[in-house]
Amino acid sequence: MVGDSIETANRDVTTMAIDKKQVEKSVKEWFTKTANYEWRRLQQDPYHQIEFFVTKYFLEKYLPKKGLILDAGGGPGRYTIELAKKGYDIVLFDLVPEMLELAERRIRSAEVSRKVRKIIQGSIEDLSVFDDEAFDAALCLGAPLCHLLTEEQREKAAVELVRVVRKGAPVFVSVISRIGLLRSILVQFPHEMKYAKHHWEVGDYIPGLQGEGFTAAHWFMPEELQTLFEKQGTEILELAGLEGLSSHHEKKTNKLYKDKEKWKLWTEILLETCTHPSVVGSSEHFLLVCKK
Ligand SMILES: C[S@@+](CC[C@H](N)C(=O)[O-])C[C@H]1O[C@@H](n2cnc3c(N)ncnc32)[C@H](O)[C@@H]1O
Image 1 (cartoon, rainbow, N blue to C red):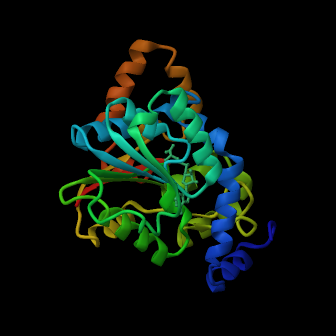
Image 2: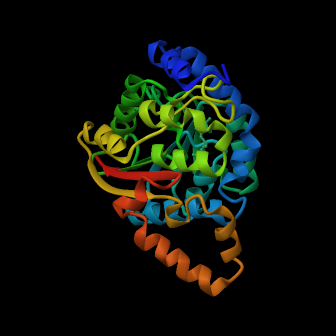
Image 3: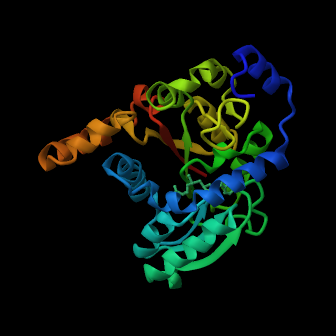
C-alpha cells in the first residue's frame, strides 16, 4: 500500500474494521525487536533524557512518600528501577515477554529485585489479575495507551488503570501527541508527508497503510486524553509536554548540553513552561496526571 494516493489510503482505513488481534500481534513483534533500544531510549542522549527528567519531576511531585506502584506498559523497567531505588514497591506489567525478560535482568543488576514484587505479562485493557484499589499509584508511561487502536480498547484501559488504584491515588499516563507527530513528519519523515493529513484527521497509524516506520499507533490530542480520564471520574492535576520547548530540536538540545550553565537555565525554563497549553500538544509526548 505504500505509495498509494492519500485518498485511497484514507478510504481503506476509515472503512476497514480494525483487526485487534492483528494489531496486538504487530505491536508485540515491534516491541520484541526493539526491546534493547527501549532500555536505552530515555538515556541515549540529553534530548531523550528530557522526557525522563520531566516525567520524574511530576512523579516526585504527586507520588505518595511510599507505597505499591503499578508500572503498566513498563517495558524494560526504567521507571520500575528508578522508583524501586527510591524505596517504592513495584509491580511491573507489560504486553511483551521479551521486554519483561530484559527488565528482569536489569532489575537484578540494579539490585532492586526485593522491591519488585511481581512481573506480569498482559495487556493494559485487562488488569483483572489485580484487585480494585490494590495500588497507591499507577503509571502508564511512554505511550502504551497509543498502541490500542480502538476507542473502546483505550476506554477499557483507562477504566482499568483507575480501578486498580486506591481513592485519592495518582495515575500518570504519557502518550504520543497528534500535533507533535505532524512536526516529526516534517523533521524526521518528510517522505511520509502524503500521510500527514490522514494522521491529523484520523489520528491512527497502521503500518503498511501509512508508511513503515513504526508499529500500529493512535496519536492523541491533549483534550482527548483529558476527556478519557475525566470520564473515569478522576480530577486532572496536570497536562505537560515532555520534550517541551526542546521538542523536535534534537541536535540543538544535545549541543546545548555541553554548556552546563546554559543547560541548567534551559532545564529550568523547560519545567516552567511544560504545562502551558501551547507547549503540551506540540511536544512529541505529553503527560497527564490525574487523581482518583
Ligand atoms: C515505548 S515503550 C515504554 C516503556 C516504559 N514505560 C518507558 O517509558 O520506558 C512502550 C511499552 O508499551 C508496551 N505495550 C504496548 N501495548 C501494550 C498493551 N496493550 N499492554 C501493555 N503494554 C503494552 C510495549 O511492550 C512497550 O514495552
